[in-house]
Length: 91
Image (cartoon, rainbow, N blue to C red; front, side, top):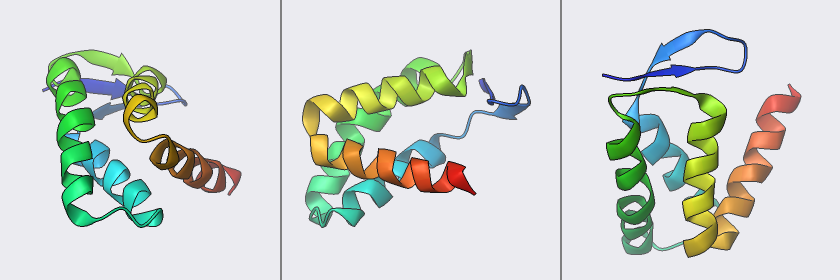
C-alpha cells in the first residue's frame, strides 16, 4: 500500500476511501443525484486511486490530481470541494 506525506511532513497510509468520500460529499453539497455522484467517483477517484495506491506521494499532489479531474468533469463539485477545504483549514 502507498503512503501520503501530509502538509506537516507526517506520513499516513494511502486511504482510497478518503478520496471517494471527499468527492461524494462535495457532489452531495451541490445536490448532484446519487447516480451521477457514483459515476463521478468512478471517473475521477478510481483512476487516481489506481495510479497512487502503491506509491509514496505528497497530499498536495494527490489533491491536485483529484481536483484537476473534477474540474474537467464537474466544475461545481470542485468549487464545493475547495469551499469545504478552505473552511476546514481555517480552524
